[in-house]
Image: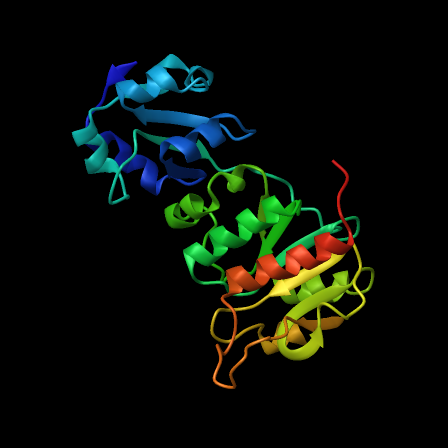
Length: 252
């Protein structure tokens, strides 16, 4: 391990096929996953306490002072370590959703929401998330932080949604979360298929709505007429995933 100037990291921010992750919990998760960590910038305490740091070649492990870490970090409170990781090159499988439930995200713009949805997919055993080209980059640092390590376990793809869903709808259900539709708690569901969630303010686009095979909603139980207009998309996605999994639990 060796010292390193703070400016060394800048080149990684512009390299393709790389993303940055920060913090002891997140980086430890990535080190203990299928993803490849190509550079580590950590304090002496990190290298002393993290059992997974030895999985990175010594030449790629750099000891930095807390002051240096603050200069290269995008966090307001840097936390012991920053990692540069390779973006996985998972091949896209057009049959996704035939044998399992997968999430489809139409124009999700907020990094925190995307990170939350990837984390929810991980929690409920959903193996893949398909994103429209307009959805925020899943390797945006804010998204990566919000996944809390789930980015290492859930495959994420960018897909031109309309042609993909048109083809998919011939062989599997395509559910869409929309307002004023049948309640997810009473509608007949399938253990397989694609669950579409839409933009934070506009919902699912008309083009994507046109290819849905089922429309479902989360009913409101508000006590007052003047209630919340809708749920945050991250919350809504978790509620819907929970109902699918309640009906069709996975065996461990």
